Structure formats: C-alpha cells, structure tokens
Length: 385
Image (cartoon, rainbow, N blue to C red):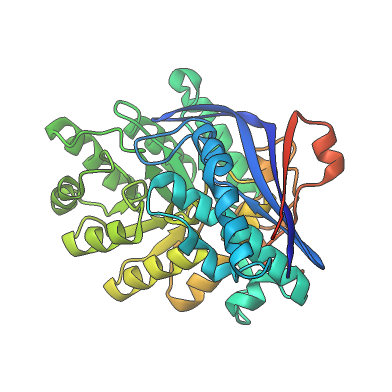
C-alpha cells in the first residue's frame, strides 16, 4: 500500500471520576492518535502515554514532541525506501530505538500500520494473531484507585459496583499507610473476590513496609504489584523471599531485556506486561514467551486507553491466554473511566467481553465524538522523489 500521509490527532477526554494512585491523581486523559492514510486503506494507532510521566514511562507531551521530531519522519523515510509503500506492521518497531519514548512510538506506529494492513485484507487482529475457538471472550477486571481523603466507604462502593458489573478480579491501588484498611474492608464485603493490590513502587522495603504488606496475606490477596521502585530488581528479589504473598512486577518490566533480568533474578512470581511500554505487540509476545517458559503467569495491563488501544490489548490477551494460562487482564470497557470513549468498544456482558472480529485492530476515533472535544490535528503529506 502506497502511503499518502500521516495525521497526528490529540484530544482531551475527561475521566469519569478522578483516579488516585501512589504515583499521582489522574483527572483528564489526553489521547494521542496516529492515522496512516494509504492507497486503499487507512489505519489508526493509539499512544499509551499518560499526561504525567514517571521514572519509567514518558509523559504524553514528550512523546508527542518525539513523534513530531522523528517518529513521523522515520515512517516516511521507511516508505520512501520502499518506493512509497508501507512496511509490514511487524517491521515498524525496527525503525525505532530502545529508549522509553521510542518504545511508545514503536507501539503506536506498529498499531497504525498493522491496522491499515488488516483493513485492506479484511482481517481482524484476532484472526491475524490466530486466536482460537474457546478464547473468543475474555473475563474483565477492574481497578479501584485511592480516593480523596482515603475514604474507605468510597472504595467499598466502587468495588461493589465493579462486582455487580461482573468483574472477575479487582486491583486495589495502595500506598504506605493505605494498605491493610481498604483490603480488610473489601475482603469483608466480598469473601470470594479475586483481589490484587498495586503499590506503583511506593514502598521502600524496610521492616515496617514488610510487616504491613505481609498482613495482606491474611486477606488472601493474590499478589502485590510493584511494591518497590522499578529500577531495583535485586530488592524485589529479596522482598519476594520474605513476603508471604507473590510479588508482581509492572513498571520494572519496561523492556524485554528487563523481563529476562527479572525472571533470572527471581524478582517476580507474576508479570504485568504493557504493550505500550514494551514497544508493541511483537515485543510483548516475546516477553510473554520468556515468562511462560519460566512458569510465571502474565496479565496484560493498560494505561486507561480508549477503545482502539484497549481492543488491541484484548486481542493480544486472548492470544497470550491461549499460549499459557494467565490472570485476568485489564480489558474492561473504557466507558468505565472515560467520558466519552471516542472510539467505542465491545459491550461487557456479565463480566465477559468478546474479542473483535471486524477488520482491523479496533475502531478509530469517531469524528462526531471528536467534534465535541478539544482536538488538535496535524497532517504530514508523504512526498517521494
């Protein structure tokens, strides 16, 4: 397919309610999309970056600048080297480096180019990945943040709503001083609920922290996610030896190499893999293969994506579950946290969502929805000599 041009679209979408984590509070979700327009088809890619960066993940503004400075040019140059034609989706990540911004760009452009190719072929992402019968639907989980004022009643109400909607698993955000109380309250309300906790690297691993986290085992918590800062795999490995519940890593697993290092060091018993951070679908499948070989279960994590990015994660989660038994992934509907979701997503029915079978990765942004939001667009025309 010969490339005609690339459009970059940024839109601001409010969160349905603010989402508190140990790393900060999210009130709005700026979304960044890339549209590739080619002969006979177009494709959309969604950037995973959040507005505020972390020690591991770049801020959306930095990614947007990198996209304009070098991301678009690399795809245009790659097309020019191919006589104007788009590369295969699997080739796109090779155009980018290994830094944090480049990995996000790789995932975004991989999605856009793959989406265009699949639409031209009339194939779905699930079909391209080889999602088999028996994996057409996936259970959904829910994430409950740290409420303003650490109000336990708010947490209980949000968990009640998630369970009523069919959530098969709930991840509670925790931080030092806010761990035992919310977990005890939720467990008292829901004795059989699969419950995880996510600390976003907020603990330091001293005796007081170890004692507080160890108490969570009394409430049958499945695992504690990212208890310590992401850089220190050795500290996580040491913590894993003394905690009476499994350690899950998330932010620490920023590259496939880091995944291998974590597995080799025994730093995690569960892995949260995020395609937007790792560099796309291909990189995530490679990381998952290493986890499966090590016997470490995986779930696909999210960055509060719109329906496009979440549809990609859904199809990927289905394929990874087919390869090795994993945990419930973050594949719930974006309408649970975005107002509105500019892309749309399959309906969640009794806690299950059906993997899309329509052509492409997922639905691109709806122009009527975009018209009601603050949108910034920029077009880059492809020229070949």
